[in-house]
Amino acid sequence: MVVVIDGPYGVLVLLGVLGAGLVAGVFCGFSTFVMRGLASLPPAQGVAAMNAINRAALTPAFMLVFAGSAVVCAMIAVVTFVVWPDAGKAELLLGSGLYLFGSFGLTAMANVPRNEALARLEPGTPEAVSYWPVYVREWTLWNHVRTVASAAAAVAYVLALS
Image (cartoon, rainbow, N blue to C red):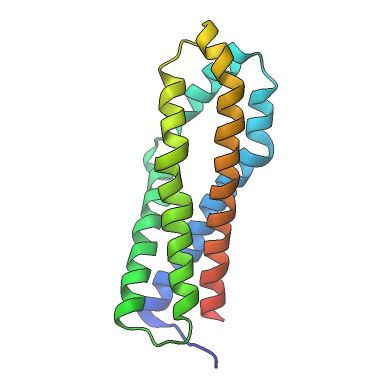
């Protein structure tokens, strides 16, 4: 059975696809080359560069896409529970859960605390030098998970539309 999601609900799901896909792309860039490039720098330079990136990431444009996508995904979940029929429901709820927990929630629980710990360190100190490889390894691992969760959320939404 083909589900037709149109009107405002269809627009909402399309926004979910777009938002989750854009965030997956940002995270994928970090997982595939940004973190490798930063890890190749001397620790003091890597720490300074990552701290600068973390500060720069807090722009309205990125936060609109990242946090706005979380709002859209939450709205999709609520509307799915209230209005949509059984067909497509699993994909919509899966997409919302993947983004809300696997991307947005994981960022708050795993990546942001590591960013905050890194920000408290002076780049050239022995503490920063010893923490840097741990940070890169752990942050990148969790970023891989965020990448997959965001991409899978976008795919789940697309499947709900097809």
